[in-house]
Length: 85
Image 1 (tube, rainbow, N blue to C red):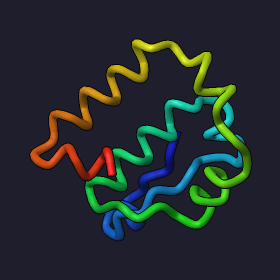
Image 2 (image 1 turned 135 degrees about the vertical axis):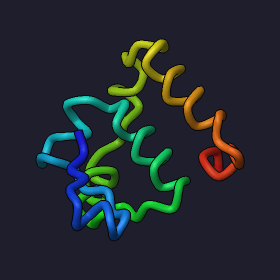
Image 3 (image 1 turned 45 degrees about the vertical axis):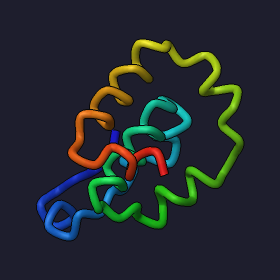
Image 4 (image 1 turned 180 degrees about the horizontal axis):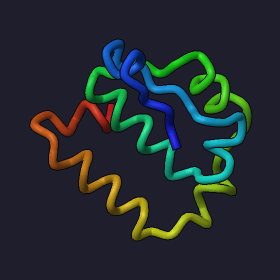
């Protein structure tokens, strides 16, 4: 889960709610990228979590349905290529 309170929402900054947020649920990686494609800034803590490990193992066991939902949301945008870049 990401913390998006009023102050952060006004600044459009995405920050993880805990130190293990991405590790506990790797689908949040794609969600973070989707928000970033919508011009949200990734907080330093988010970037640190993303850079803290390789994600191949965690992503390889993620249910394809969950990834598919995030991908569909990203592709439904007016400019879906910003998610893919």
